[in-house]
Image: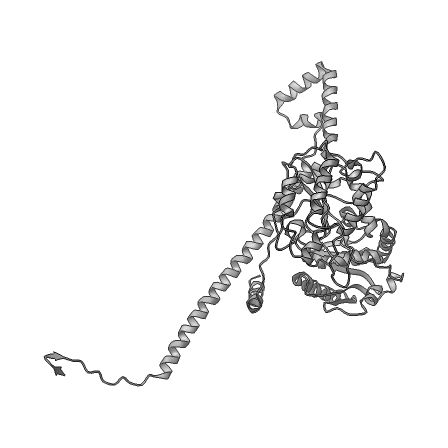
Length: 498
């Protein structure tokens, strides 16, 4: 059409859209997007699985290397060293020995003295000297150096007064699971402050605390009740604590002193000279995690008990460990035709189940430790402690020698159940008798305080507490509810890949 000298295009009416064609296009696009998403998900899952598998293999390789060197690098005597020395050096050493017997004797004696002075921190029963304490703490900080201060009493009093200005030493204990305290930190504060402030004339600070300056803070009560440490308290401690002095405290929180208070977290590297007795899983010395005292259960012959192994408790604390434990235990019971009982929903008559159980499962909870392990030991039953990343075994040698219980990583639970079944009822009965004989000295609050005192000072006998490396916090991402279906799909894909 030509209007005013210009040609104008006239469009014919567009045809009606074809719904079938539109549906096909949308379907193809949707399938393509879903396919790309699924392919990416499978590739990422496979990559993550292979990465974790590689890390596990690397850990196994490192453990194998450490065990190899620990077995093959024992100190050599001069005679044993000769066969592996070059010929020229062997001749020179032989000549030197023949011509100077006195010198050789002196050298050998010196080497023997030096080897005897080497401290193995893994088997220390006390840290009553600075050298022993440093050997224990160097498992975590190899370069740590320290000396005992000449003004120890004045230095402690200064820190104690400053802490008291932030928080009272009788700060109210927190409430949890029907128990309102006192907890182990409260016992530490009350017991050891009384020892010091009611001391006999002439008593020095190191007579009570060994080579350490004590730090009395109700860490877990502040973390639970206030969710933060008092403003300025941590900065004050960083300022007052000397870099070349060792300090000691007791912690119960499952994330420790440094990560327990969500609003006041700070790295352990800020206080590398703070020695921590920990019931929760982050420290230098594992101690039992207890609630209220429990009375011993009735003595029933093990052979007449109904359940070989049992667990009654919640399944929402550390779901991965406990649900895996339930599946493995029930499958093992069906395979071996032994009666087992695992209830992750809780029940009122849980003690009746314990009375009729030969062994009780005590999986880790929020932290690396387990309230249930302490309860079972107080009740006189044999616990089977289940952990995932790090075993937080108080009195480690008693666990390793299977004197007070069994300890296993979750992935080895089935083999451990086979081992416990092979042990026999007589062995389990003797273990229960040993546990009851140690109940007051090792598994009560008063007994733990005595074990801590022996470990600090070396007085009153040896302690069964042992040093470990301070394990750093493993950060965990919060799992969102809408991701749960994807997590299930991810586990299915991982199983399919295996």
